[in-house]
Length: 254
Image (cartoon, rainbow, N blue to C red; front, side, top):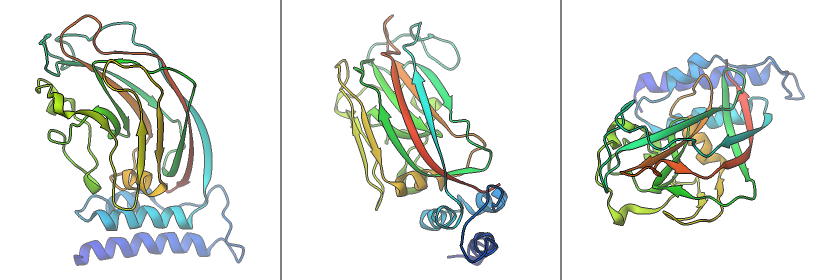
């Protein structure tokens, strides 16, 4: 580990330990105790995924855990792909030409670092045309296609969504699959129907998986985004209504 990296980690861990020790003998925290978010973000993304994860894991272990339940809804789009608009291309069979993005923010306090997230999906049948991705802070956590050969990997190989790298790419049938990323020591489970099929959704991610996403950087507002993609016809970029509750445990680092 480089000296500069060690120093940043020392400063972050020191701030976390200071906040922890200032709580008194009962090791409890009040609502206002935190560590500077600049210390957290300045220590992330410098080339060592394990160290980035250690910073997040330490914050989750030492600071007061807060909880929230947020209802997320992605209604069926009321339009087809917006061809040749906003970075979309013209219709072309068997190519990824256009998309609709539906971002939904969680509304957590500024400086929130999410330590764990549990998903509870409503009883619903999921149908999409042609493909979809579910993003958590622009990281792909589930998709109906393996985009790993086009999207840039972040920490632990987690894929960062970038439509500019996907627009116009070939639709390869052998890449159609239920894509659910795994990281060492942080399992994930994804269940949803295949292309042009109907079924239910179920997603489960271990805390270390969620913390690995946080290790790529703490945004000012966390979000989930549904991206639906099409190639060439007037029913593309559609999906049925999707609704779920996400229960998050988080700490404040502002």
